[in-house]
Length: 238
Picture 1 (cartoon, helix red, strand yellow):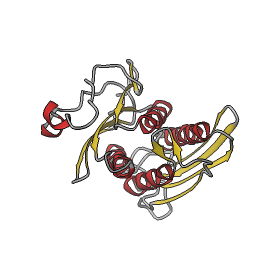
Picture 2 (picture 1 turned 90 degrees about the horizontal axis):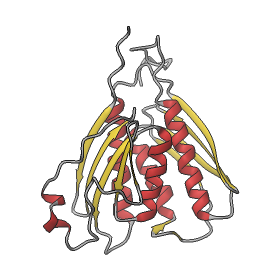
Picture 3 (picture 1 turned 90 degrees about the vertical axis):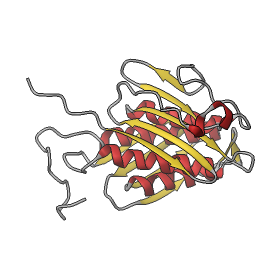
């Protein structure tokens, strides 16, 4: 019987003057240990901001099952919702905890969370060998339809067309969806195109985009049996 491949996991801490972020990621789902407590997430350090719940507490962006463990708290409800949808449909297990400068706005929290997630993605992926490399997905949500195309290329680039009607989606500035995904692509080292093809509701437009991205990630990250150690590039390197 062949051995099951090791799960691809990473734990990232990103600390700046604006944000304190922890990300734990498994690209292959399964159990994840709780994020480790530290001075940045002690009861005293989070007191000036909205309380961060216990990681065993079910809330709006948590789903703890045998095949996947998802627990996300950034302080921005709609961002949590999008990260939840992304990880769920990508087949990831993901824990995220952020304490950001939301008294200013949502910019640093969104940007830094996606940068940390991009770093976790490329760290968990490890050597870019034996992968499908390319992924694409269409995802509908009622009247909205989005397309995402991903290349694990080590050539960071992002193109996104969303055409949101309003300045905000929930508590998230709609501009930050483009900027956040661009930040993720840069840190993850991928080429990413996301297009909302149609839709009249901004919530639906955004969620269909993240679900399309999730499907593209699942496809591109798939390990191809028989190609272990091989680089899927004419250059011989990614």
